[in-house]
Length: 480
Ligand code: UDX
Ligand code: UDX
Ligand code: ADP
Image (cartoon, helix red, strand yellow):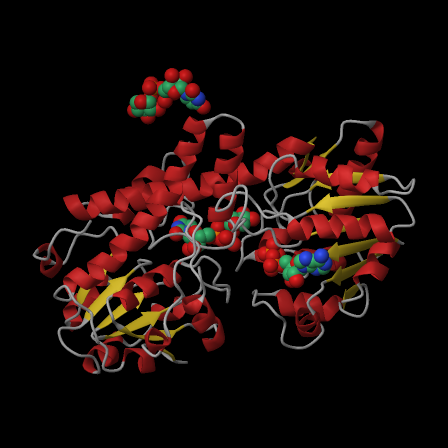
C-alpha cells in the first residue's frame, strides 16, 4: 500500500488530500499539521474551512484511508510520498521584505523530513514557492540525508477556493515537474499514477522542475492581470458612459480572449494573486529584469487603485463625508462560497471608510465576527514599502459591528456597500431594505450583483462598478 503524507492541513492540503483519498482507495493518506486546533477541527463535524462539497468527501473517507493528525514525524517517516503544503507568506522583514516569499515554514518542514526519514521518499512541492525553491530544498534534503534518496517534484495546485472540490475532480490540467534524470522520471511516473486514477492522461502534463514552478506564478499573474485590465476599463466606462458588462461580453466573445474571468469588481483578493505577483516581481528584479518587474507591478497598482476609487465614490456621493453615518457592508470574504478573508478587498474598503469615521455594520454569511475584527485591527503591511502602519485604535474598533443578517446590517443605514458576490444578495427584498434606511439611500455595488434599474425604481441612488453613472453621481466631484 502506498502511503502519502501531506504537511499542512490548510485550504490546499486538506481538500487535495481528501480527493486523493476518495479516488484512490488503495492509498493511505495522512494530513498532518502543527496546529492542534486545525487538526481537531478536521476530525470534527465542523471542518476548519468552508468549501462546498468538502464535508461529504471527508465524511466518506475519514477513518478509512484519510487521517488527520498532529503526529507529523510519525506520518512523514512512514510515507512514500510527502506533499508539502505549508504557508509561504510574503516576507515582512529583512532582504526582499514586502516582495519575496518567506520560506521559513518550508525550510523547517524540509529539515524535519530529512531528520525523520528512514526510507527513500518523493517530496512534492505543493505550496506556491519561488522558482528554484525545489533546488534549495533538494540541497537541504541531500546534505542531511544519511544516505536516503530523495526525489523532489513540483506539483503546483490550481484549485480556486469555493470550487475546490470541482476543480480537483475535473482539473483543466495537473502539472508535475521533476528532474530529467532516470530517478526523477521514475518519481514523476509514481505521482502521475496517483492522479491517473481519475484524471485523463492527456491532462497530466510533465515538465522540468523550473517550468512547473514558474507556470504556477505565471498562471496566477495572467489571471490577476485580466481582472486588473477589466477593472481599469471599468473606470473608463464610468467616465464615458459605456457599460463594462457589455464591453466584457463583447471582448470575451473573441475566442482568442475567451469569456471567463472578465468580471469587473472592487478588486481581487485571496491568498495567491498578490503574493504570487510580488514574488514574480522580486524574481525579475533579482534576475536583472526591472522592466518586466515594473510590468507585473502595475497589476497590483491597478488593484489598489480600484479599491481606493470605490471608497472615494462612496464618500464623494454622500456629500463628501461619511463621518458617523452607518454604512452596511454586505460581504467580507474575498469571493463568494468561502469564509476566507485573506487579502480580501473588504479589508481595505472598510479601513478606508473607517478612516473617514464611518460606522460600519458588516454581514457575511461565512465570516465570523472574530475574524473580521482581527482583519481590521491587524497591522497592514504595504507591499511597496515594507513598513507597518499603525493598527486600528480601540476607538475605531467601536465603529464596527458585525451582524448575522443583511436586513439587520442595513437597518437605518445611509448606504450599502456590496463587497462579495454572495448569491443571497441578488434576491434580498430591496424594497423592505429601502423602507428601513435613511434617505437618500445609497447602494454601492462592488460586484455587479444587483439589478440597477430595479433598485433605482425603488428609489435608491445606485453606483455599480463600470456602469453608466446615476445622474446624482455625475454631479459629484471627480473621483481620483
Ligand atoms: C486563484 C486561482 O484561480 C487558482 O487557480 C490558484 O490556484 C489560486 O488562486 P482563488 O484565489 O481561490 O484562486 O480564487 P479566484 O476565483 O481566482 O478569485 C480571486 C479573486 O479575483 C477574488 O477576489 C475574485 O472575486 C476576483 N475575481 C475573479 C474578479 O474580481 N473578477 C473575476 O472575473 C474573477
Ligand atoms: C489584429 C487583431 O487580431 C484583429 O482582430 C484586429 O481587427 C486588427 O488587429 P492583425 O494585426 O492583422 O489583427 O494580426 P494579429 O494576428 O492579431 O497579430 C498582430 C501581431 O501580434 C503580429 O505581429 C503577430 O505576429 C503578433 N503575435 C500574435 C504574437 O507575437 N504572438 C501571438 O501569440 C499572436
Ligand atoms: P494554503 O492556503 O497554502 O493551504 P494555509 O495557511 O491554509 O495555506 O495552510 C498551511 C498550513 O500549514 C497551516 O495550517 C500551518 O499550521 C501548517 N504548517 C506550517 N508549517 C508547518 C510545519 N513545519 N509542520 C506542519 N504544519 C505546518
